[in-house]
Amino acid sequence: MKTVRMLLTLFCFVALVYGQPSPDTATMFALRDSLKSEHLNWSDPNPCVWTGVACDAGSHRVSRIEIGNRGISGTLTSALRNLSALTVFDVMGNNLTGKIPSLSGLKSLERVLVNDNGFTSIDSDFFTGLSSLRFLNLDNNPLRPWNIPYSLTDAASLVAFSAANSNLSGEIPDLHWNITFRTLSTLTLSSNSLVGELPMSFAGSSIQILTLNGQNLKGSISVLTKMHALTKAWLQENRFSGAIPVFSGLTSLKLLNVSGNQLMGTVPQSIFKLSSLSYVAEEITELWLEYENNASLEANLVKDFDKVEMILQAQEY
Image 1 (cartoon, rainbow, N blue to C red):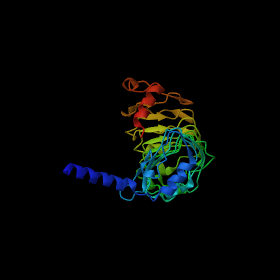
Image 2 (image 1 turned 60 degrees about the horizontal axis):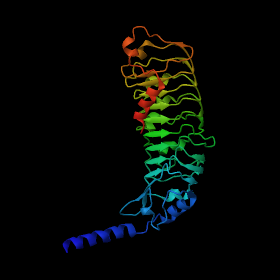
Image 3 (image 1 turned 135 degrees about the horizontal axis):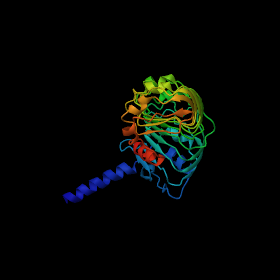
Image 4 (image 1 turned 90 degrees about the vertical axis):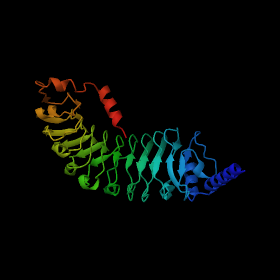
């Protein structure tokens, strides 16, 4: 009988928790109605039991939406900004289109993954008030040309910001990167239409992985010498000019590519004395490399991009 009573108590508790209506039901119904998928079983009146949805046990507020890579099409409802307890929003790798709606004011939001979809625009106040945001991936969306807004500084807790191949334009603004973003380790903005020079406030920043390849950035790359946390710098296929600076202070640098620019002169010998360096691009326009007396280093340099990709994949967050 004692066992039966315990089971009944447990059953009642589960029924109480999952039977409670969520305050976010209307918003989740709006999201359901905006999506098209044969793989989402979102028919229950309680969204807390839906596939890919999690709710806080106490408040019954929706805390996580994780429906990435499920072949979903449709659009995202603007009502998402009502999910004030949301911490994770993952819809990556689907066929979603239209606008990435504003998530302004969602102070609990930590991770947003909307990459690899067909979104065509992003709300101008998207970043406003996202004070807990740590990971944001906007990669591979055919957005209309947009700029990095000043409101990105609201997301000062960022660890990784990735917006590769997302039609970013304009200059990289000087947002006091070394002061504002003290935890930012990955900045990936490659394959866009960025112009102008590298912000001087990159110096002394916490950025470890910097990928800016494939656009129209220009000027000197000397600021890199003061980015002491750097492990990877991918700056190839831009319009950078001047000499390659001395990188002797970058003791953690592993991967460096500055090929396809307008750099001149000689690659400093100090670059080959970096014990951590595992890859340096050999096809550097109008430069000549001094390999003599570097036999031990040559054995360590990665010579093909397949191996580089293996290294990069191991570093993905």
